[in-house]
View 1 (cartoon, rainbow, N blue to C red):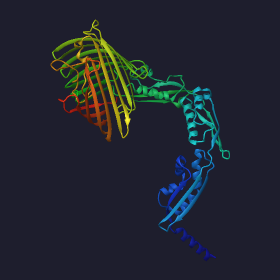
View 2: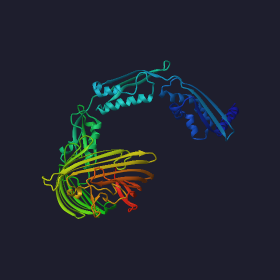
View 3: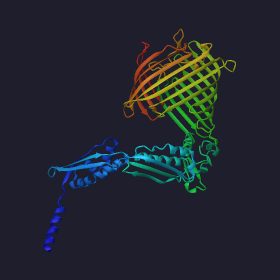
View 4: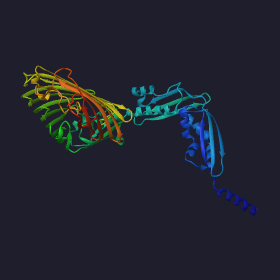
Length: 581
């Protein structure tokens, strides 16, 4: 007896120590397609094991035994609870080349439909009109096919809506799908308990650099109002747009909530009070240039700030400073006082101009509106004309931009409109009215490409063109106008050929741009434009090719443009940097 047991043990030891046969597997699922097939493939363990290559043969056998359950669980989220599944499992080949073939025929059967949807809201939110409206809009209804994903989405939508309304203790008492397989019907029950609605408690602004009242007027949360997380995020955006802070943390203090009032802590981190920026560069329109910009971000506790800008270039220089006082409760609205000196060399003339002004910037809706009053003294000469003019000019401008990216948009548009003028009896040397509109657009194209378009039109209404100051005349030509022609070289000319500018201006452009490698790309363009004393000036055209580099500060452009309407002009190089729209 002992000898027999030893023999049996030896046989078992040999059997278990023998290496298991390995095999590769081919797995097929037939009878279903689309989402059903994709989910069944993802859930089928034997298929996932086969995808990993050679495995022990016994593993495939065991996984085959549970394959029907895998497929059945994959169909249930789509409402198929009574499928018929048959499977075949075959092994072929010798040791070292064993191959498993597993095939599953699936008949999904009838799809379960929803018989009844019962959604109840209890707690303080039971009478909340917003939650009641969300309840009516849930993506599940009686008669629909049962889809677990839609059920889960409905649960999340209602829960998120309650949380966004300030019900921070919200939760489901019941959330069930009751499936009646034989009838292919299902009932859905959702019972949401919102708990109490929280109100905004004490708002703690933890900073002492600016007056608290200055910052609080930009907040979209107020003590005693229903708590809404979206309002916290909006307040954070509002404060960041002021330009004082590098970051702003706004957080509810949950542990200190009492009587359903939740305190809020606001901790801003200030940027340095001063910013200096210097640069050196070259632009075809301006020539070589150097610049120095200085921002004094906050010069008192009321948040006033000063901007100064010095630019010295071969053909256009200016020195200016602006004192800004924030107004209202929208970032960017302000009262500004400015002073500027500029010196510019035109194609056949020169202008030096000193101006002071006051402006009021507002944001009505989606537009930016600037109302201004400028007083300027300008000395200029063009051809044989030399003159000094004084102008008191009221004006207003409107601007709007919609873009998917501020610096390198692929889809968007912008509009700018300005009208201003002067009257000779009111501290002015001449009388005129001038209007200008500029529109830009960009649209996506296939293969990492985009299409850019631009149109500008300007019109002056003046009794005598000769009395229109040089800085108020229209010109065309240059990087931002008609490439292929020199900066401000297109306009009316005198008998000696000097460019005098014009009362009217038209400029337009169409450009296709494609990225080739990383941030490098190419462009092809056609421009047209002109300036003159007719409402629709004669247009000069230019075409060309360009190189593009998308830098963090904007698009660096190197263009080679050929003028089509002047045989005496050859290929012209244009270099510049553009930002967004």
